[in-house]
Amino acid sequence: MAVFQIRPEQMEMFSQQREERYIDTLVEYIHTTFPEVAWEKSDEQIRGLVSVILEEAEGFDLTTEYTIGRFLVYRLLIQEELYTDPDWKPILDILGNDYLHEDDKVEQVDTLLFGGPIRPEEMEYE
Image (cartoon, rainbow, N blue to C red):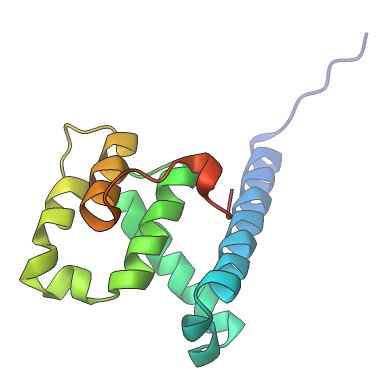
């Protein structure tokens, strides 16, 4: 029986390909759901924006496609005011709460913004 071994370089390549596909999905989501953002930017600029948002999401310990996708929506709706307008501080407090699981974070933010949680099956980018 032949045993196949995946080298670390191959695993990294698979991971990068998966991340690229996810970024492609988010770029398409922006085109369809936030056309006002897409009209103002080239695809390269949108990909750059998505990369920045992914880094920000990581800083809030958001790691799943669902929670990262929800954070993308928050950032596109609120934009830079999320970080500059004191009215949005409660959202930053929730996202920065190290004691909350990432699903609980987005549930609480969705409740503040939309009156209740938005479930993964309701999201088009999944």
